[in-house]
Image (cartoon, one colour):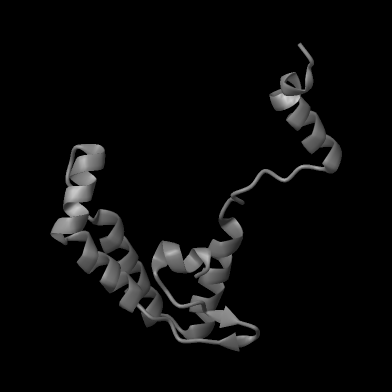
Length: 112
């Protein structure tokens, strides 16, 4: 699943040059599970409060809104969102990586 699928719960809009239809079923499944006793008890155990599922509702509304757009416009919106997302990793050059490694773990190489 791509990161756009996880965020909005949609099928990828473009895979190897072919355009696919958006599917909101993952959003609805996620919303349905959010209200399940299993999920609510997990949230209560972990966070001390129940989940109001507002982010799941937002994903459903967003998906349904995208479904009302033309396919080219929806494709453009999804591509823009994908480009605007920050990258999960901090990319470093080999020199920066080795320097950072030495700063963090260099003390382990010292002989006592």
